[in-house]
Amino acid sequence: MQYKKDIFAIFEKFNETFFKNSLNCRIKWGKKYNKQRKRCIRLGSFNIKTNTIRINPALAENVVPDYIVRYVLYHEMVHAWFHKNNHKDKLRHCHNFKFLEKSFPEYEIASKWLKENKKIFITAC
Ligand SMILES: [Zn+2]
Image (cartoon, rainbow, N blue to C red):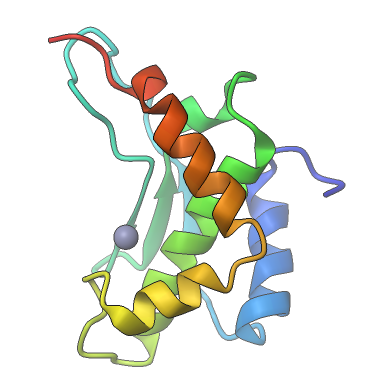
């Protein structure tokens, strides 16, 4: 990937590669969170009302591999796609969702890393 953690460039590329350029949602880095106070954080989210994907800025840190950012962004794009196509399961991780998610080329490596490194994102309460 020629763009290192450039979510806008990755979005363009994924939109073309996986979604036939059908997604028109907005995309932004979320606000920095206060590490001391949160027990766990959301890596990404998709807001139906504002049609916006938000990626947690913690993912921009160097300890996080680039493929994690790509994976989280792709995951949220699947939500956006389900929403756009009025899928009844658009916000849940239903069978269809998981099927699409697993078709992401870096799914295996990303979920393995997340499993092993969750503690980076979860601080003691
Ligand atoms: Zn999700």
